[in-house]
Image (cartoon, rainbow, N blue to C red):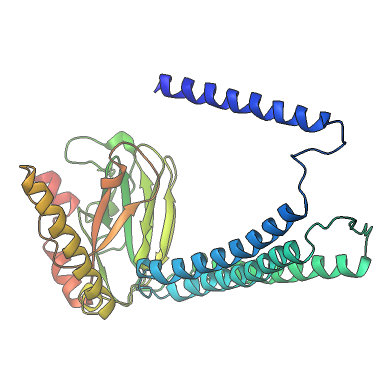
Amino acid sequence: MTVFLVLIVIILFAVAIWQMNKIYALSKGNSSGESGEVANGKDNRINAKLMVMFMVFLYFLMFYCFWHYSKFYLPEASSAHGSKYDNLMFISIALIMVVQIITQFLLHFFAYKYKGKKGQRALFYADNDKLEFIWTIIPVIVLAGLIIYGLFTWSDIMNFDEDEDALVVELYAQRFNWKARYAGEDNILGDANVRFIEGINQLGIDPSDVDGQDDVVTQELHLPVGRQVIFKLRSQDVLHSAYMPHFRAQMNVVPGMITQFSFTPTVTTEEIRKTDYMQEKMRTIQEIRKEKSKELVAAGEPALDDYDEFDYYLLCNKICGESHYNMQMKIIVESQEDYEKWIKTQKTFEASVAQ
């Protein structure tokens, strides 16, 4: 790596010397007062046409990318607040696209129309208060509107009201896995501290706190559909980020403090599996995995495991170490009845310690 960096430095130094020589030759000129480095009428015409060609290519590339990479868009949000998030994003993209199309057209069109011509001098235009007011006030109004709309959206999502039957769940991050702690029948999470981490008590639940005795610690996150979930987030080691893209939810998990986020799931795991979007997505994934398995088998390695059904996942969206990519936990969104059946099969903290 060091040799590669040294080679790059040497090449860049040589390019710098070469450019300096060109600048020196250009500044010196020749006896006739002209230089081959100065653009003539033919050069200006060629460059003007190239600018138009580049504008056409830029627009073509832009629309092609929107069409081709639209398959990577996420499906409709699976949470109650997700539509607000998506609306804000699409409004921002639409504004950027409109401004980009107009400004790029004007930039390349004027470069073509006002190309250099022999004997023609550029007009020195000192200022125009009216024009400056227009191109200043319009961006101010647009950006102010977008920012205010974004603040209202952010406030609606983050400053939530707690429902009476809200489910309280702690997401505990540690390199490189997640654990979920449910508040139990009292719906109150017991106190926890890293000083209590020992043996089976991997989340540091305070053994002396009565509220923590009925807490349930799991390796899988089950959420009842249509019920508000309030997440309390803690980290054992470094900065993590709880990222649930299909629910449009993300919150940093900071060591030494508790952060929180809330949303209401609206689409169960079974329901999203049956959507046309997800079925087409799974067919594409299966084809890719089959081709990859053929390559692995040909190389004498085991084939990939089957991946037949989609699942929601909780991911880490901060680069927290070498196994960051593998820090994930399955999320199952189900009916309230199925959730209650599942939670009854899980051991409480008190039962786990006693065992």
